[in-house]
Structures are given as C-alpha cells and as structure tokens.
Amino acid sequence: MSSPESRSSRNFMTTKTGRALTEAAGLLRAPQRILPLFSKLASDELRTAFEHRHLYSYVASTIPTADALRSVVDWIFHAQRPDGGIAAYYSLLTGYSESYPEVTGYIIPTLYDFGRLTDDLVARHAIYLATDWLLSLQMPSGAFPGGLHPSNSGLATEAQPSTFNTGQILQGLVRACVETKTETRNAKILKCAVAAGDWLAAIQQADGSWSGTAAYQGTAHTYYSMVSWALAQLAAESGDPRHAVAADKNIDWVLAHVQPSGWFDGINLRGHPAYLHFIAYVIQGTLECGILRRRDDAIQAAAKPAWVLLRKFETHKRLLGTYEPDFKGGQRFACLTGNAQMSCVWLRLFEVTGDLRYLNAALKMNEMLKQLLPVKGRRGVVGGVAGSYPIWGAYQPMRFISWGCKFMADALMLEQRLIRKFEAEFEAEFEAEFDAKLETKSEASGCA
Image (cartoon, rainbow, N blue to C red; front, side, top):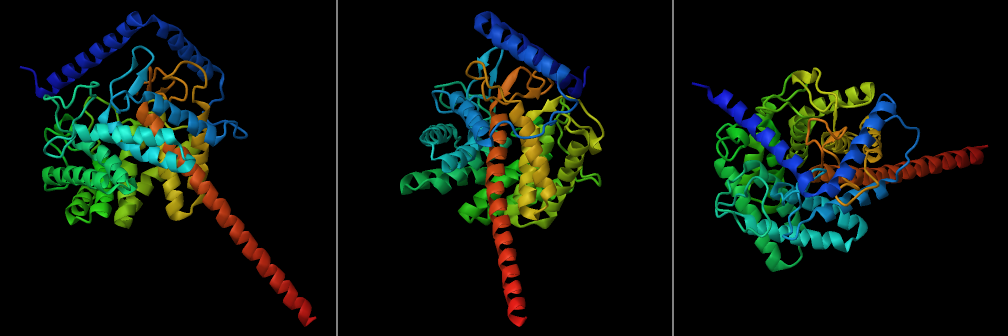
C-alpha cells in the first residue's frame, strides 16, 4: 500500500502533466498564438545566448521608470475580466486565465498608489469593479475562496476557504476602506474586512501558525507572514486587539524558524522547490508586519536574509530562481516576481535604515526588470512580467503573471517616491551646509 506522501507526489505529477497538456491544446484552439509564442521563445533564446554574463550589465538607464510603470499597470488593466476580477496570468498557449481572487485583492493597494501618483481615472474604475467583485465572493464565515474563479458564476458551492487568499484579499479591503469616502460604502467594506480578520484569528493554531484544510497542502507555512501583515493593517484600522494579537502570534511563530544563516525554515511546499517568490514572501511579510507592529525583532529577522540576497546579487549580478536551505545553491533561471519583491524589500529597508546600499541594489534590480519587459506583441504580452526568465524557466513557464506585474509596479513606485524624498533631503542638507558656510565666512570677515 502506498504512503500518503507517495500518493500526493503522484497526484501532483498527474495534475502537472494534465495542466501541461491542457495548455498545449490551447494552441490548437487558437493558432494565432503560435507566432507570439515562437517570437518570445526566440527572443529569450537570443538574449540568453548573446547578452552579458549577468542580467544587469548596463551603463545608464535606457527605459524611464514612469514609462515602464505605465506599461506594467496597463497590462493589469487589460487583465481585468468582465466580472471585475484580475486574471491570474496570460499564457502564450491558452491566453488569459479566469479571475483570481487572491491577486485581485492585493492588486487593489497597487492601483490606489498608481491612481494617487497619476490621477488615473481608469485605475479608480478598476478598483471599484475589483472591490465589488471580491465582496460578492465572501463566505458567510468571513473567509474567501482559493483558486481561480469562473466569470459570472457567483460563489461556487464547492469553493473551499483559503487562509492565504483571505489574508491577501484583506490587504485590498483594508486599503479600500481607508480610501473610501462614502460613509455607507466605507462601513460595508470595513464590516467585510473585520469578518475576514475575525475568521483568520478564529482558525489560528495555538502556536500562531495556520494549518488544516484552509491552508495550502494542509500544513503550516512561514510565508503566511503575509497574512500577519494584512492583520496588522486591519488592526490599525479596526482598533480590535484580536487582529493585532493574531498578527503578533504568527510573527512569533515565524521568527522561531529563523536560522543563523538568515534562512527561514517552514516554507513547506511539497512537490515544489523553494522559489524566490516564496522566500521573498516570508521576508516581506515579516518586515512589513514588523514595521506596523513596531517590532525590531521582526525587522532585524527580515533584514538578515535580505542582506544575504543583496550580497549574492551584487556578487553574482543575479538572483537564482530557487534556493536550497541556507541559500546554498539553486536553479539558475530568474524568478522575476521574486526579484521585484526583493527590490520592494530593499527599498523599504533603505527607508527604515537610510543605508544607501539597499537603494543601490534596488535601482539595479529595477533596471534589470525594466529591460525584460516586452514592448512589442499582442495584448497580454506587452508590459507583462514573465513567471521566469527565460520564459521556459521552472516558475510559471510560458506565462505573464498578474502578481509579477503587481510587485514590479510596487517596486517602481517605491523607487520614484524614495528617490524624490532622497533628492529633496539632499538638496535641503546641501542648502543648510552652504548657508552655514556663508555665515561662518561672513563672521570671519567681520572679525578681520
């Protein structure tokens, strides 16, 4: 009799094979995708064959950050489905996926930031549609479902509640609550956000983790620190101590998994390697929750692996797509979403510490990411962030993914905000020093 682990492994491989066959069959249904597919394959093959040894060999920026940001956000706008949800991805084989509640939720803060930066009316409309769609999916328990969601299907009876998806969607609901000025709508969104937070607090294990049927693969994961971040955001808005306690309890559990190398154990993805995307999730959630909860222990725990990855990036001019425990080796493709997340982490650490080395690394990472944005092709390709570079790499192969666009947009907007702040502070400091020198010189002349 086979063990549960072996049955799980076989089921995973069967699912993976079936998914690959389904996507390949997509070309038969839509042969017009064949040309863009081969064009992208050839482009990445040529780039990897003839480019410099590393990804960020450049002398000066060639793509304005504002232009790259516009392109990435336009990709998100085009990925919004008629129901208001954002597609998980655009596949070179099958086209757009169905709407993805998880990503739709945490894209909402990104669109608010973009709308505030550019006063973009399309962003406002997209936010409204996305928020209403998410509210329609909430379960009576307060939870939100996992997986993709077919358009116009309503709340599927077979949908299962998901801890991680509920946490990610909670980020969007909290931001929508903060930004919504209409009293009735604000109260409605806050009520739904509190219900989601209450459910997360209620199902949390005594040790602070989340496991069981609502957790991915039924087990606890340290990358659920992202859920803690959402609860910390909710606590700041709701004032309910239960949400703050739940956030702190999970971060305590996460910190118990930190190794001397800075590595976080407990990512726990059976059948998958530790993709940089999930490593960055742990770091980012721990850092942001630590900032909100004013916990230096969490900030320092996140800073250690962030620094390890910064040194690897500066030394090898790239980050690997996966890492083994203690950051010892991994697969050599690039996980572009993880790269964008690490840029966000470095920029936030620069904001917290003032250490220019974080800013320097983030600017290099953003420049590399901008160079890899498609500027030609069909809708779904232009402005898209691929799962992997090259496109056939192990993470989300042959796809441009919405969460990659979300994190890249976040990184580019953080860059713009912090560069403006840094330049203003530098200018003010320079003027103060200049005035001080003039005053000293004037006094010296008077004494003479």
